[in-house]
Amino acid sequence: MRGTVIIVGALGLAMAAAIAPVAEDFGVHAVDGRRSGYTYAAAETRAMQDDEFANPGYIWVEKGAELWQRTGGESGQACASCHQAAADSMRGVGARYPVFAPELGKLINLEQRINQCRSERMNAAPWPWESESLLAMTTYVRHQSRGMPVSPVVDGPAAPFFAAGKTLYHTRRGQLDMACIHCHEMNSGNMLRAQRLSQGMSNGFPTYRLKWQTMGSLHRRIIGCDKDVRAETFAAGADAYVNLELYLAWRARGLPVETPAVRN
Amino acid sequence: MIHTPLPKACFTRRRLLQQTVAVWAMTLPALPLAADSPAVQAAIDAIIGDRDAESGELSLTTPAIAENGNTVPIAVAAGGRFTADDYVEAIHILAPGNPVPEVVSFHFTPRSGYARAATRIRLAETQDVIAIAELSDGRVWRTANEVKVTIGGCGG
Amino acid sequence: MDKPRVKVPQKVKAGEPFEVKVLISHTMESGQRTDEATGQKIPRMIINSFTCKLDGEVVFSATLHPAVSANPYLAFYVVADKSGELEFVWVDDSGDTATATRTIEVT
Image (tube, rainbow over all chains, first blue to last red; front, side, top):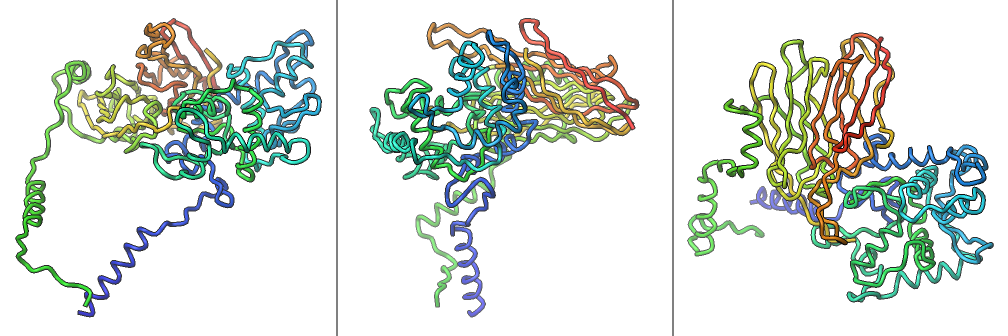
């Protein structure tokens, strides 16, 4: 009799252990409950990201490294002409963008800063959004901050733009009448069909997405979200998205820059 | 007393049903491989011909559930260290559930050292991915793994 | 085609197989997709073959079909008895090729 009770008791404990949520160790990929999309990815996808050779995103890192040295436009200058070695000059840049640009009176993100350099310093044509060249250069520059904590400046002159981004994040939009917060905060961790909803962290962008089978910008991803809720999308690079990008960067504060991440 | 053992005989309708299903499941014969479509059979015949395929020393590594059917990592390994006249000539990967069943063929030589290879493949749906190895002595090894392909929630 | 990525050990031991990894940028257009704008099938355009030679002799090759993922990745083994040059060649449906070479030092 006592034996039975002990066995049943032990079974009960074992079951409780199996059912109780185990605090998973996500290492550097989670900070204070904020979880990188890495922690929601399948083991094979994480392995693909971690192996710097198998990670297809490095194709764009290498293309970016070539473009960094290549002269363009009428100036005869390359990025390297002013900025020398990207490993030194660009380290930390990708961790803090987007930033307030006094000359524009608004925020500017990495893609826009690269094109600003091209048109104003190099007298070269700006690269179209989502073009291979712009993706490669953005990936290359942000990769220089890989592992550094996302650390945007959201006060001072950036404050009103941060507030606008925050408002957009919480605004119901589209025929489904949903805001970002509905999937990525209120339901993160829950299943949407066979897919687990992440917290929508931006620390891995530009990201190699298995669905796209190529590299893509954060704005391309947000446009995808907008289409999912059947909302009118903004154009990539629109002020509304850059403001949202700053709010997303703040949500991801402290998480490591993972560019180039690999995601489903 | 917190544990009341069930009486030995307990012929409630539910219990009878449970037992019947359990017994039926235990007595199921090993299911034969699903019949291959003509295109798949043709692709297999093109490799194997009239030879008999054994399971042999062929391993195929695949995820049980593919996060995305566009990019499924796979790895194959067959036999051990090659010698000049005893080696694996080729390993073929077939995906019977794809529009085109042939996926990739790895061709080895004694200079490959090992019949080991890895790549990433597209799977249109949940299916048994097939690997077939051809050995230098004419033997054929065959294995298969089921890979479940999920449909993501986000169209974005 | 763009410049491929190749990973081989710089120094290898004579007679001991070593792993080679290659990755190349290519959309691997399967021929199964439809252009949403025109309703027409997008023609197949894939890398259909890959060959690895050591000092001119084929040591490993692969035949690729449309089900190989975009930006094809391959890993395989090679064994060398003496220092030499590895040559890698990718060929796509248009006949376009990409090549890479790596010198390996056998110790």
